[in-house]
Amino acid sequence: MAEEVTRNIQFKSQKNNNINPAEMHLLTFSIQEQKVRAIKTLLLFWTIATVCVLIPIAHFILVPGFLIGGIVAAKRRWGKSEEGVYARGICPDCKNTISINLDKNAELPQWHNCPECGDMLELQAIQD
Image (cartoon, rainbow, N blue to C red; front, side, top):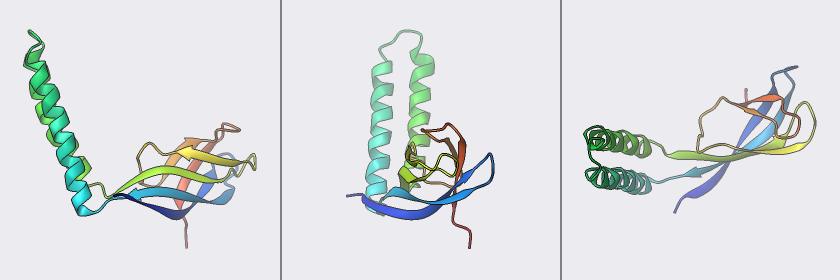
């Protein structure tokens, strides 16, 4: 089962370079979980490719596309040990507590708009 982990990060305003501390919530996966997720992804793509065999003309493009796409997507899933869930902290501009969904991306830096004031925020690792 995936384990939720919290990592300390910071929100940096793009307008005035103010920085506030924040925390990023991540799901971490073991090697076994990564393998299972990769295999499920591959089977999903290949199942779709099998169904696409029934579509006249389009199957010449769809079937090879899903076969190759399945391998590519499974490889990405296999190599991904962390997925971002959300980041929470105080916006450097509007001073409101905000929560930003991370679209399963745990890599930093990331750029997102503040849901309250609309300012562009950079999510970055804490600099020592």
